[in-house]
Length: 219
Picture 1 (cartoon, rainbow, N blue to C red):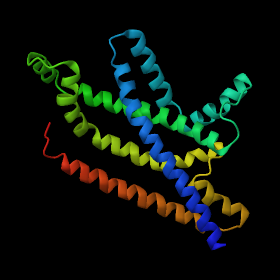
Picture 2: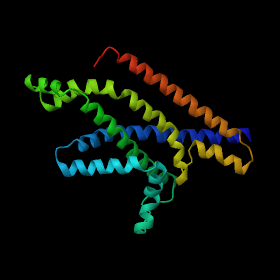
Picture 3: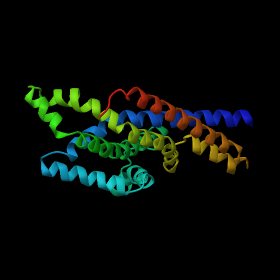
Picture 4: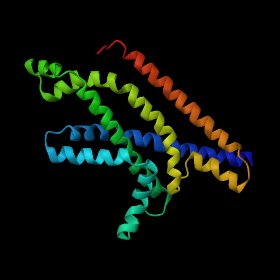
């Protein structure tokens, strides 16, 4: 029994790590794109982007998972995700990336708008292009400003991966919970708790070290 539990938890651990890593890989750059859209001078683009962010941030991630996975099949009679494990994982990734990209976009937007306009104007006076100003002036300060709130969202993502079980993605929490019904044992859940505590603890130490390395750059 112990070997069976450990094997199942290990499989769930790999799924949770995959969901976490791919979500960050997609949400961090997409969030920057969305932030540019929300700050766009073209009103239709800005309104559309802000409306998307408002909807995503104002509704539960669990609801978004259910709508994205079951919605196409119920509305159009065609389940675009299929019934396989890979299809369910793809649907979960879509929901997670969209959700966290919208949260990241607001962090990016706040960081960019918090940088004094005079610095960008000074770059223009020196003959720098808009892209040069962003990458050489704005971006350096942006990283320093947004690191603490980004770290909070990343740590929250670790725990939110457990929500993927609502569309039958067999992540760590699912694997730990199923032994309650099948074998009448609860101790696998304690192992899942240890995973979340250790993983979030390591991430906290990592972000703390990154913040210290950026202390030389004072805004």
